[in-house]
Image (cartoon, rainbow, N blue to C red; front, side, top):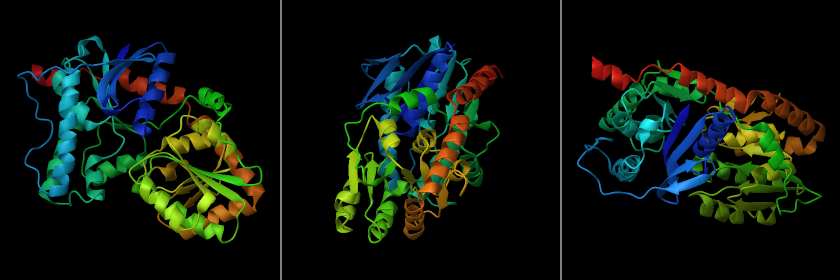
Length: 405
């Protein structure tokens, strides 16, 4: 089978969505399928085939127009954000026109904008699959762009509903996200939960590589990986670490990643007097090896779906502390394979970190339980087989059925 994975976002991976595409591509190729990826790299669209990227040169827009997003928007914040998405949608449409999409038996989009465009542009009989990594309606509400029962809410939810209904199947990575769609009154009839997986053997090989970063022999290492954004909760972690430093100094925290909140977090760490106790490592390609050196993994998200950073921590066999938020609660069973703390509660997070530092036997037990659970739950083969089942049972595209009606 020849498969096209698409997104308006970046690839190679710079976040969970890109990581999902990378792992799915690997799993499908291991089973003999051909996979291409259409995505951005440094602002320009490329086709990834195997290990090589081929830039697509944009042509001038033709006469065909596609109404991707509503134009009669209400609200200045939403208007600005929507304008960026509309611009990216236009670039994606120009890129799609450079690709012979008729060569693919399956097209698998990773968000609703590329899915909307491909629904119009692809051959009618080609199945269109969608994986949603977040509910746009709920995210717009969370960031204050729209309010329930407002015109803005109706416009966003109507558009999101229309795209999902046009796709032949929709994959969601967590039961929590499925429930979010239900709460937003977006139909979930064609949705199926398929949890994220990784190539465990490849990840373990990467763990054995050298990092060039020397770990202190006399200190425990706390690690937090992921985008540096407010929703990821690293500011809560810093508050908890400030409390911890007043009691113990036998630890160092590595914060790995980049994002719009990076500057604010560094200023906060300095203001809290954390000094050399917290190191911001930036974007790294050696996270598996860093995890191998670490003792405790913290994911302090205020909200999250089914994060790959947590998947990797499980496979690496770390003692885990996670927020009781989103899909994290489907992954961490409190006191069995990790600890859960209320989101945005720095005192609760501090107490659990202190407990693990004071009780090495408990830390060791949680690490072993996490690894045992991760090795079975996050198999790439499991995820790939479940996605292939969606592909193999996809009906003739709904667009084709509608055109024949």
